[in-house]
Image 1 (tube, rainbow, N blue to C red):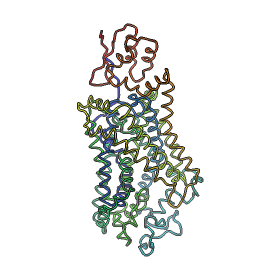
Image 2: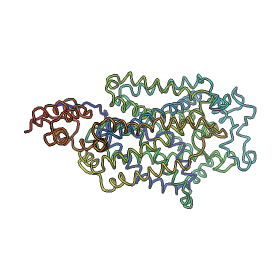
Image 3: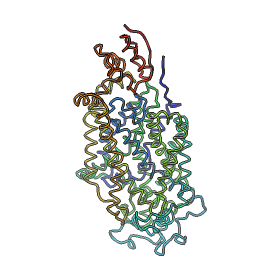
Image 4: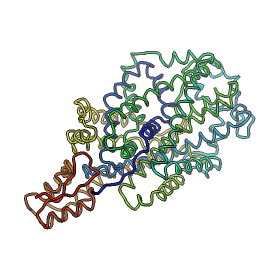
Length: 614
């Protein structure tokens, strides 16, 4: 009896918190509330929930089941259909790219956290060394001073705005992406701390990361609740919440609303980064991943919705304080969490406490999402290359250190330009393309019926007709829609008023293509590496997964087909990498003796029993 060892989660809760911690990230706070407000308030929930049910949850469920059944990372999970293994390398590389800049955003949060530990917040006044002569006390700014057509959120001469762009980023010392300068030592030190946190959270695998998420995944909910209670007590808060929840059904006639809902549900759930596959691979074989998929995806979306109350209560307060409309202060992205919200906090009694609490939330939101991305890289490559698995701690350190080195580009004076470029190209079209190919590979090449049988072997029941239809038709169609919509609505690269030069867009597409090219390159490699005629190669390459449809019949149908014990069959046995060495030995014995000595029980693919069957 030979058992394939694979680490498992210490507790079921470790897995659930890890998935929730990865899925619930900064975008839940700085993007969803604004999209909801901009696209018709409550009306936006109609396409959002629709896409969640018909595409988000099915994709989420598919990745969890795929990882749990095969107990492999993003690359080796494609033993089910080897020609698609390039998709695994694509998502691993994308996860690595995202780590290059996402860790820097976490470093910003850490920088703000340290800066908040003072009696007076540094973005409260205009008399600091980094302030310009144009810096204006926010108390003197109102609707009449801003003028018609100018958003307060774009008013970049407040102390909070200047602290972010001049005090933290030092953007004023760069002329553009061609003028990066040297890394800023303050951000570099914060980045070092972030990378060390990631390393020591992951160096022992899920045994260590599964404990860290008890803090990083739960802390944001505690802080969000505290901020919500404080926010609704502020003057003008109800105006902000009413603006957030207003229902404008006419907005549903606008295609942009549906595109925003589709892209938000896709990026929010985090399908396609290899993280869900990696996390699920550490589950027990009979774990109910169906229930987990429904639970975690629902929690993620509810969190996005509830965070809007904490955000818009404060935006309502800001609008009231400056005598402007909600649309003048409403914004998304870094401007919301590093400018508008900190400025609002600075006007509250006990502002230091509220600032520390807020940036702890941002830090923990970022850390467990970054942990998920790095775990996808580590699991994906260690499962594929055994030498890396044997030296996991060293490989974890090398990955963390390599991420740190590349991230230094984003800590320079012009680092925000590098970050903006990577954010648009590293995980934009490329991740949409990867998930589309993944959905096609599982649903059409491996087959929905075969995949459903795998799920049944794990949990004792087959996915219903609804899920099978979504996997085969709806989810691929949804992804194709998102890919086309994102491509058609894509505009040039900009950061505020700065327009990137054409050559930077070329570099951006080069980054995107560097990951996407793994799909066709590996497919061609697989095609040309299989011996036989053109027709035979096509069949073997495209349908090699048929040998794994039912592992019990692998030898009887592949290696021992109709008594053809040829040297070619023997080579097939020896080259079979997805089964253990003992399986190859069994195959060789069968070739020599004509006796099938191989059998695998139905229950789990992880246990091999050797018997004699004549």
